[in-house]
Amino acid sequence: MTPHRLPDPLRSRLRWEVGIVLALSFGASAVYAVVSILDRLTRDTALASQTATINRPLAERPLFDLVYQLLAFAFGLAPVALVVFLLWRGTRPHLARLGLGAPIDGGRWRWLRETGGGAALAALIGIPGIGFYLFAKWVGINATVVPTALDAFWWTVPVLVLQALRAALGEELIVVAYLFDRLRRLGVGPVATVVSSALLRGSYHLYQGFGGFIGNVIMGLVFGWAYQRWGRALPLIVAHWILDIVSFAGYPLALALWPSLFGAVGASAGG
Image (cartoon, rainbow, N blue to C red; front, side, top):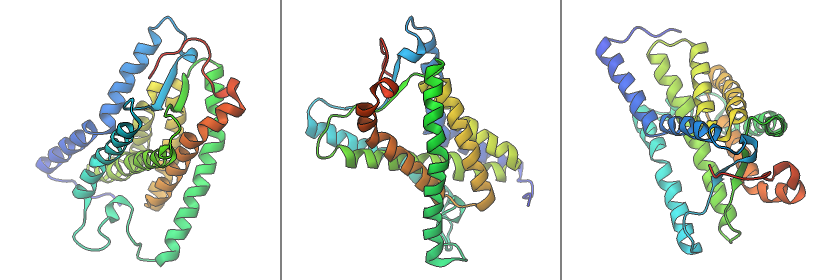
């Protein structure tokens, strides 16, 4: 159902709000990613021979590295807290505008179904995604993505799980749930909303190369369609969290088993 047209002052306020939220989160990441890909393309080293590292050490000493990693996780959730504050409802379910909270129908079994649906969505995206990444790297349109360069400590895997959760909550609650709500209120149609969200998701992955952009646009279209159809964010969060846990924590094993596929080739440039 198309909402009534908002008064112009409120529309202007919402546009500014969306701009500020994105400037504090993934809009800024998109700008940096565009600059990063331009930097990569103007290097003497071929794009496929460069590396893009996602999780890297933040300090030389392990204890302080752990502290910095935990601080990055906590403060990285600040934009999520902002959209929760902005879309909070005074009545239950408080997080309904973000596609969360207990649904009216289904009860606790709905949570179980949504979690299972998220796992299925992760398989749908993740298995072809690995093949597409290897193809993009082979044809030279993507850097070698290094999901983690952290040394092996007792806290490494728990920190990677937390960083995966931060990415899942941030991307799905801001780029999908929040943006969908605000664009709907601004009168943007469902197709344009899904496409806009997917393009934004792809743009802040451009630092990985054009393969990362294309793959994440496709993921954004699938996730956006799912959210548009069911209006629930939990399956998207679960799917994204699983994908990133497998990517982050499983990378050392994949590198050990298939170094020619997942390792960097030739010279490298951090990203």
